[in-house]
Amino acid sequence: MMFDYRLKVFHTVASRLSFTKASAELNISQPAVTKHIKEIENQFNTKLFDRKGTTIQLTKSGKILFEYAEKIRNIYRDLEFEINQINQQHKGKLIIGASTTIAQYILPEILAKFKSYYKDIHIELIAHNTEIISELLKDGKIDLGIIEGESQSNYFDYKKFKKDEIVLVAKANHPLANKTISLKDLHSIELVLREYGSGSLEFIQNRLKVKGILADELNIVMQLGSSESIKNYLLHSEGMAFLSISTVLNELKNNLLSIIDIKNFSIERDFHFILLKGEQSELIKLFLKFMNVE
Image (cartoon, rainbow, N blue to C red; front, top):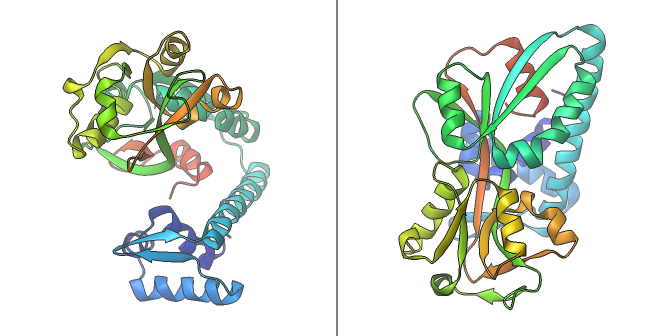
C-alpha cells in the first residue's frame, strides 16, 4: 500500500484514539508512534491531539487531517484496484451477510463500486440481525459477516469496519424536538425499540445499563423488526427511538425527524467484520482489502 506510513500511523491513532492500541495494531513501539505523530505536527506546525486525563481527542487540525487521510487512503485504494483490474481477472461468488442497518444504508453504495471494478465477481447480500448473521457464518452459509452487535465469540475473528453513532430521534414536530433531556427523562418517554436478537438493541441496552438504566424499567410501547418500520411509526406517534445516525440522514435532511440530545450521554460504536478463524479465500481477502480492512 502506498499510503504514506506516517499518515497511516496518524490514521490508526485517530481511529482508535489511543497511542497504546495504535502501537499494538501497527506492531511498533509506543515511542515510535509518538515520534511519527510529532514529525507530522512539526511538518504542519500544529497540534493534532489534546490530552484529556488518560484519553486523547483530536484537535481541530487533527480532525481536518483525519478527513484528508481518509480521502488519500481511498484514492490510493482506487488507484491500486484500477491497475490491479487490468492485470488480473477475478471470478467467483461472494456471499455476504450483514445486519439490517449496514445492509440497507451502508453497503449498497460500496457494493456498486466494487462491482464496477470486478464485473465477474457475483455478490449475494443477505440481511438479518446480528444473531442470525453469526449463526449463518458458523454454519458456512455465508463467506463473511458485517455486524453492529457487541457479541464476541471464539468462533470468529473481528475486524473494525467503520464508526457509527446511535441517536435518540422523534418526529420533527414533537414537543421535545431539538431539545436536550436528561437520562432520567427516558423513564417518562414512549420508546420504540428493535426486536430481540438485534445488535443495535443489545448495544443500546448495554450502554444504558452502564448508566444505571435498565430496559425493563422503560416505557417500551413497541418493538419492531427494522429501522424503516420504526421511522414510519415515529412519524405517526409521540414515540421516540434510538436509531443509527446512518439510517436517519435523509429524514433529518428533509426535516421529518429530529434528534433529541441526552445530557452527558452518547452512544458510539464500531461496525465489525466477522470471519471464521483461519486462512481466508482470495475473494474474501480481495473484498477486505477493497474495504481498507487490514
